[in-house]
Length: 345
Ligand SMILES: [Zn+2]
Image (cartoon, rainbow, N blue to C red; front, side):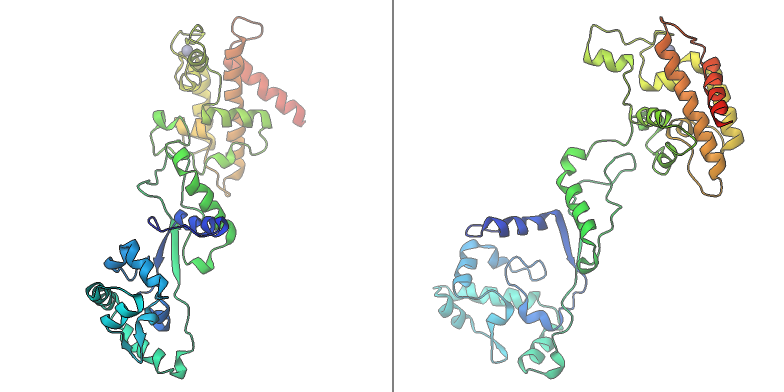
């Protein structure tokens, strides 16, 4: 549709047709069936006619009302090139011959039988099923990658007549925002934990009870790197130091929750919890949360609660340095868990 002339179309129809740019279209069956006579001659990827790529040739045919296969047929035969030239008022019989040659070459072998049936008004013609088209999101050179936030795995496209309108809408939104979202990763953590450490499938657990919303929010913000670490602040204001208040190393979100030496004690107990309640420890389990599974639901939500409290203790003590309150992460963690247990009693 790229070189289509939109001139003369009201803007409503123009935008309606533009929507199709969002999709790549494919015909399911090469068998064109009885609809073959109605196949459009222009912009039809299934009947590629090189000569009709010329706008002036198309305009000539259009003026003469020749737009579909049936318009080049009469009395069970193809029109002769001279007849076409006369109708179109072309001087060049050669161009018309070329169109006819290219068209007959492009048609599938079964076309002749279908045209014959159509033209002899055979009763079994009966319209036949309209040719199905399958659609897919038009992605250009973009490629699906595990660590990217944008994914076209859902909703699924397929035969156009069977796709829900909501699914079509979602694909439109995704394709229209493709350029803005193409490089955005799901999480900053894929840099450290590797692209295969995708949190897909884990995030569902981050907010599950018994965890409280505040701890859930903190977990979510850690996954997205949406925290005002010193590195982040220094990026916004170069006069602020980016060092960790405990060890002086650059305080990134990775440093604050995994790498700082002060976390040794708390990460030791986190490892133990993961061994007992989950399948073992990994940074990915700690940061993204344990993978949810219904048979192990109780262990998973309990582990998630404990990991959430550990992160809350880390973040709280990080803020307390130079102020009041304990900066002993393990001590604060014990207090947080005790407080919660008391409210449950
Ligand atoms: Zn540190």
